[in-house]
Image 1 (cartoon, rainbow, N blue to C red):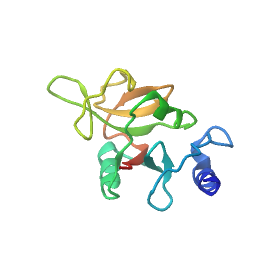
Image 2: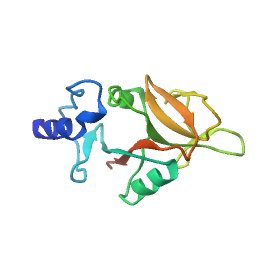
Image 3: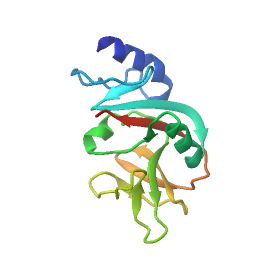
Length: 149
């Protein structure tokens, strides 16, 4: 596990405000694709390149993954040191304005607080347990995730 933590720290140092990222759980987690990070039964890959929501989604799909989904406050602890905004796998439905994850489930109030900005119908994760609305065509960095079954 220590080797994974060290690799992750070196690989993603530029994404964080502090030199040492939070420690990962000591229990076994995996398997994940090469160069992906495992935390709480999810695999994550951080991308520094900025793309639109649609391009980011396509990139994740091509790697058998989806854009970042927040399942709980505990999941958010993993991302609290991230210093930039990353696309979330959330999109606002035109029918009723509710927020829906890529997998079709509805955003629950205890998952994330949404902050309305501009007139965006996509969302970025900003830290402090908040998602911010964003124009889907705006360029942002992104995180792909895979659920470990």
